[in-house]
Amino acid sequence: MTISLNSEVSGAQFGDRRLTKRLGKIIAELGAKPTMSVPAATNGRAEMEAAYRFFDNPKVSPEKILQPHIEATRQRIIQSDVALLVQDTTELDLTRPKQQVDGAGPIECETDLGAFFHPLVAFDAQGLPLGVAWQKNWARDKIETKLSAKEKREQRRKTPIEEKESIRWVEGIRAAREVAQACPGTQCICVADSEADIYELFSEPRTTSDGQLHLLVRACQERALSDRDDNWLEPFVQLLACIDAAST
Image 1 (cartoon, rainbow, N blue to C red):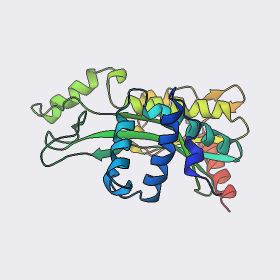
Image 2: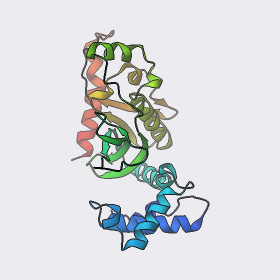
Image 3: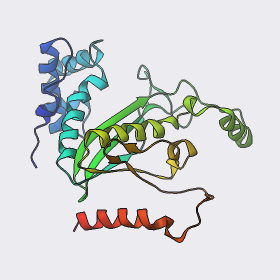
């Protein structure tokens, strides 16, 4: 499958065709040199400044940039028998020796500054990336450095899930359910690591009008099961068998 990077963003709507055209040019330059910074990847000072002006434009947002790609991703999901919708979090370290990046916040300590990116990435059963199906990004205003570990645990216990960063896992499975609803012919499986082993995620409804969103999470806590029937594992066995069959 050959996909043009420009075609993935050509439908971006900024209310200005010049911005859409500029995005295509920036994507082509950064896509050709994905490991380089904007100054190194762009062709000269004029192109570098044009890229920075584009990102600083109030009409431009990450959501608007990604929307056509997300729509294209759904079309690729529709063409797949099985889609793994994998969510995870990446730290973007933007720490600079002197002048700091505007909007960056503390990561693990007050001296390390950056942001967090939490995408829901779709793969087919063979592991071929289909694209980003949803994403969330944020920066912290501050981190608590004076509380003990016990005090931090108590504070987390009292804080509603809506006010925690872990709400991203719930938002991710909700986005996965929307994908499953829009792609009824595809068996959609939301996958997450042990950080997503929280009650609020498991309590989210996974039934769609045409089927069900499946969930696969790496456990990190002991769970009490009310149903002790020996067949309680059967749906998971069938699910893993389906993935294995589709990948061979």
